Length: 34
Image (cartoon, rainbow, N blue to C red; front, side, top):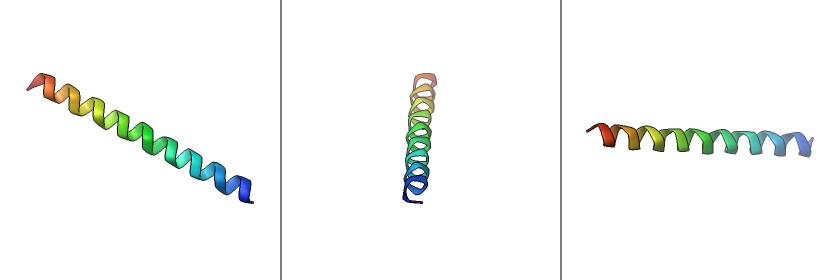
């Protein structure tokens, strides 16, 4: 039970990190365009 909860947390934090890096990339790209 604890283990599965911890894995869910890790996955959500990992996807959040991935989302953040994607947004950073998009911001950088739009800045280079404008």
